[in-house]
Image (cartoon, rainbow, N blue to C red; front, side):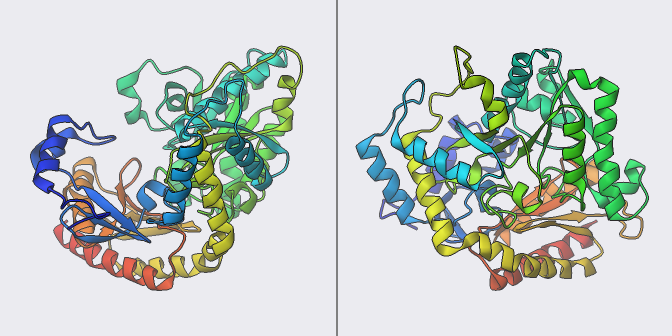
Length: 464
């Protein structure tokens, strides 16, 4: 196979170089050492190709990133043109047109008075920025004891030390302890497992119950010590937990009551994934900050941002007060230019509207899998769904650690990939399969995805 008119791919040579030198992210190096690694060499639309020439459906948009689809020559050309004109300049006391225009564009999409944009190079950095800014803001208000942050169980918010403190996955943190202090956890919005959290009742009441656990934690720690609450509009880790009706409205009330900032982590849910440019708008609540990244450029160049309300920005408008924080490549000219062109594509091709129109069809297509004994729950929103797998459908009994290891890592991940579907089999909570395809696809592709899932999950059940 060839790609981009270059010499044929030498898979064996690449595999050896990977074994010799490449350290994979979030991966067991032993797998690379023993079996090699899939090498992806090309993308076009909603498909990717590996170094052996095999074609796959990209059911995860790379990593919740390639929202506009692969192979957009227009974005590559914009990047090349900008690199020729101004490849790099920092926004440390200087600026350039692309960062200015992109900040203006993002502010126009953000809800309410979120008018200030602080650029970074990825989602973890955006969360880190929000954490530091929240603590600093309260110091500037003469309330220096407000430094703690609240997030949800099993939630992932990034790997920098501050963002890791907000992340609610103990197994991802224990090897790096001591972690930055100040992170506290409350229940998430997994209604399928509500009884295990101690709640019985309908989903509307569950939303109020889950939100009230935030108030309970604020009161337990002391409102004078809590700076912010960090929540994803749809929680990713654990398997796509959408908010119950009224949940975010109640959270907003609680944050206002106790003078706590509300940060919407939209690193995944931003830029059309849920059927709006920002999911905060879709769910009708007003955060004090939004963190975003991934889909901003559809992955064609790295960038992240923290979008900040006028209220939080106000202390920095005058005098000598400065936010001594930043990143060399934040607001990079090439990335900013690509982001602007990417947002043009969103508008011209009505990608957000495509998600909004087709999401109910996607849901119904995936819900056909409910007839399989291994499928316990199908949940999510927009083009972002999780399929929770169970050992016993009637009792919702999940798999033990050994079974989960054999099911997800030992069979499902590879079997789905071999069947032509790239997606995620995740066990950071209960075992789930996650889907977040490019926003360009429609009903025909939904059927194709469902067919592959059905075949692999049917085989998985016979192996238990």
